Every structure is written in C-alpha cells, then in structure tokens.
Amino acid sequence: MTHGLKGALLACLLLLVWILPSRGQEGDLLLRVLLKEVPEGQEVSLLLPEGQGTVRARGEAQGVWVEGKVQPFWEFPGPYFRLDGRTYRGGVRLLSQGGKLLLVNLVLLEDYLLGVLPAEMPEGFPQEALKAQAVVARTFAVNRLSPRAPYDLCASEVCQVYLGFAVETARHTEAVRGTRGKVLSYQGRAISALYHADSGGMTAGSEEVFQKALPYLRPRPDPYARGPKSQWQVSVSPERAAAALRAMGHTPQGSDSPVVLERSASGRVWRLRLLGVEIRGSEAQRLVRNLGLPSALVEFKGWRAEGRGAGHGVGLSQWGAKGMAEAGYGYREVLGYYFPGTFLSDLLLGGVPGPEEAWARR
Image (cartoon, rainbow, N blue to C red; front, side, top):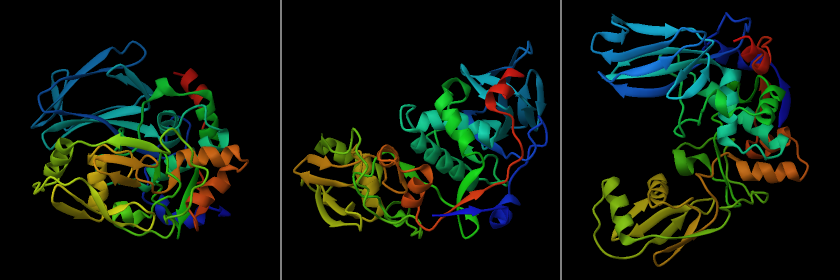
C-alpha cells in the first residue's frame, strides 16, 4: 500500500461532507446516524442532560410533535442524550418522513467510531488489528455520506453496528485516536470498505456478493484467518430450505437436497440446486445465508452443510487481521493485504480534544 497521500487526493470528497463548526472541534465531520424509526403516532422519549428532563415526541402528517407543538423537524444540539436506555454522544434530530418518525444522531465522525469499534471487533484483539478495523470503519462511514438523504448511516448490522457511549473501552479508543482521520482511498475517493468476520481461508471478490467488481476487492488467500467458525457443520432441514426459497419468490418443485453446480472464483457457491429449483450468482449466496449458514464457502452432503468462515467474505477478514497482527504485521500492512492498490490517506481533520476530555466537560 502507498502511504502519505494527503488532502489533495480527497478534495473532491471533502466537498460533500458536513462540517460541525462548534464545540471547539473545527474540521471534524458530522455524521447523521439513524438510531430508530417508529410509526406515526407512536410516542418516544428522549432524556436530555443537565436537568433538562425528558422530551416526548411523535411523528404526525404535519411534522414532528414535541411536547404539544408541531414543527417541520426538531433538534437538540447535544452534547449528549439518552434514548431507550442508551447514551449517545452528540445531538439528535427528529423528522417525520414516509409515515415514520426518524430519530437521527448528529455525531462527530471520531466520536461515532468510539461506539462502533467495540461493537464490531472484540477488545481482546491485538492493537494493530483494532487500528485496521478503525480505519476500515471510518472509511465505510465516509463512503456513505449522503447530504441529500435524511441520514448517512443506520446503527445496525445493515450498515455498521453503533452502540453509543456505554460500550466504549480504552483499547478501542486508543485504536481510533491512533488512526485519527485516516481513510483508505482509490483514485481520490474513499473506497467501499467492506469487512466480515472470517474469510474461511479465501476472501471473495466484490462481484460475488454485491454484483460490482472493484479492483481493490479481489479474491485472495487468507491463511491467517483462524476463528471459531473457520470450520463448521450445520444441518439444514427441507422445511427451512422451502421457506428460504419462498421468501425469495421461488416455489419448491421437488424434494432433492442441495447440490452445488458451480463455484465462484473464491470457491463460494455460485449456482445451487435444491428442492427442484436452481439459483445462481449473488442470489445463490443470498439463499445460502437464508438457510442459516455462516458463509457460502460450503459443501453439501445431503442435508448436511460443511463449510468455512463467517460472513460474505469481501474485504477485511477480522479474524485474518487478528492473525496477521499476532504474526507481527502492522495495521498498514494488514490494510494493504486486504485492499490492494489503495492509499492510506488523511482527511486532514482539525484538532479534536480526546474523547475523555470532551466527555468530562459534559
């Protein structure tokens, strides 16, 4: 991987981001993270800090109802708030859209990562693996910035799991601060920084799962990936298979057990036949996941599945990163292996106080 590519390389990207000019953290990016959406008419409560009490709100056709007043949207600037028993850094915006009330956390990028990293990688992993995960999670978030949409990211595994302040740890915070502002770029833009738990010994090309071939997301051996699901066996029932097919719009035509007819470049299922129905491409991999199997790197022996790895297999293998770090590789080398041809670039963020100082001022 080439290092030291500076702000000029990402100038076009930075034109798209939101800047938060307050709180003495000039230059950091402001993310909008969807925490929750509820149907119109359903009331939610937010606990505000410093004796400001509880705010009750609900979505209505005319806008957002907050404590008896309806307005187009409602915002609380922070510096923190509490929702459903969980504390979040930053502020919150409520808006009514599509028959739902959206609760969106307005949070600085580096603060956001403090609540993502513990949810995505165990604290006990080596520090260099945690740093690699921090860069990938940061890049994933920057790549998803969408100023025209009501939010940039969600807080679930559909995007990245984000659990707020309570999950923060010293080791995860050290990894975030030690890579502050670092992102992976390709041709001057933040990459699609995908990751998964365990490649099973071979990562997948992006087109195998997401239908688009990207030059930095190619299949390659992953010898350091050794996790609890590096090898597994699962029994699949015909009933589960029939339900999975119907959920994808297919009608079972027979009673035959799964047979892999074709594999992808990484060895994953690419064409599969079961219950008289043949599925191919990324849809075949989706069917495998719907069967409850950890990955599509699998062989079938009747209704018994024997496979390797966990997750879609594209990009960074978290257990592989752990293995590389334990073998003495630094986070830059880890990232260079899983994302070949990319640059480790600076977003050139301004000076941001450490998270413990920022929290102490609250």
